[in-house]
Length: 335
Image 1 (cartoon, rainbow, N blue to C red):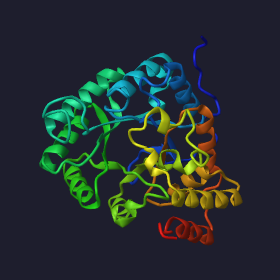
Image 2: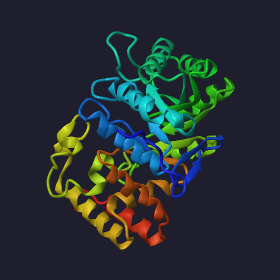
Image 3: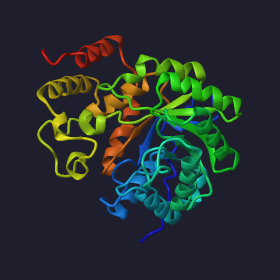
Image 4: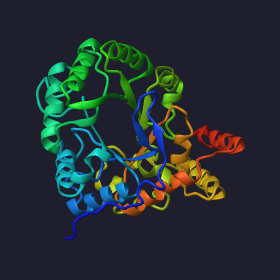
């Protein structure tokens, strides 16, 4: 097999944005390894996804310790591919991982204790064969552990050279304010937050987006396509290669209903008028929020990555388009 050589034009089409008020630049579209990088996908197919992404200027690969299945497998597979194909490009990559969700049995296998976070980063680095990650996230808030302990552990991870930047994921506005204040006092500021966000999932607009802008924190939003719902792929049934068929833990058939399909059809018509696919419009829509630095996409085929990156060709929305989208997504079950 030929040795991988990245495209010489990889930086020509991608757009990049500064992550909050930090010096870190991120591509507007990034690749998440939540699905399709465990034992359900062949390693060569995973490598092809990563190569296709990097050739298009996607430099940010997002992982977590419990991504798989099984837990840890996405990190192990990423490490194998990194060692074989991406070693010459390590300094061009932003690699992140997370700890905080259930990872191993017993009282130390999850949440936000110093014990869990330090053990988590050490195990992640070993699985990936890395000396450091670029971003280390606390994956979820922990109401039972003092936030000072969690933040001190995150700060020590940076001070030990195991991560360059600190991030938070799934934190609500109040927790984000508190954690960011502690981290700044520790001289290891939070530079990025990772929340879910899409046209169908607007929770960050209830205050988190304002907090991020006020604090100078960037964001990498996950599920901008609502796990494939905002691609229209489920409108005519459940494809055999879909996430719902291959790994239905997070997207279940009960989520599909006529009211949802009606919204998706209306959004698809608007996307066509804009000269975009529904997926492209959905990505462009999250990126027009000023608190969003990058949209994390998942993919099972390189062609999906190519399509999604083309969203960057039309990021502008007229006010009447935004109002139209608001009307569609605000429709009630009774309508």
